[in-house]
Image 1: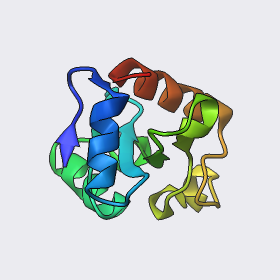
Image 2: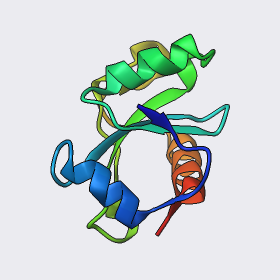
Image 3: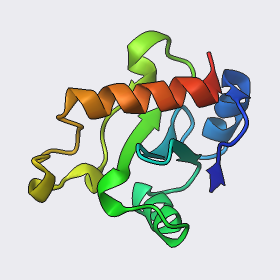
Image 4: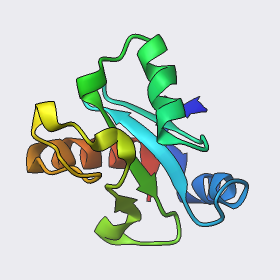
Length: 113
């Protein structure tokens, strides 16, 4: 697992993808601390790692990144950790458009496209 604290490029992200799932990198975003953490087999592994680092559960959202895809489809909002009925999110996606926007801002700030 790796917290992205310096901007990485798509080539580096693609290398990570090829060594795990082939075309995809799992990631978790902390929307309150502006953290992007990548590279684990499960979103829940990254989630646990960030919780140990002081993140709050309600701030963490799981996504998938596809380095070979351009535009908005580069980010897939799909993770079991996103199912949170107590926060009004009853699906694996991210239902709140403001949270989606914040996730995109963090991802595009950390990854050079």
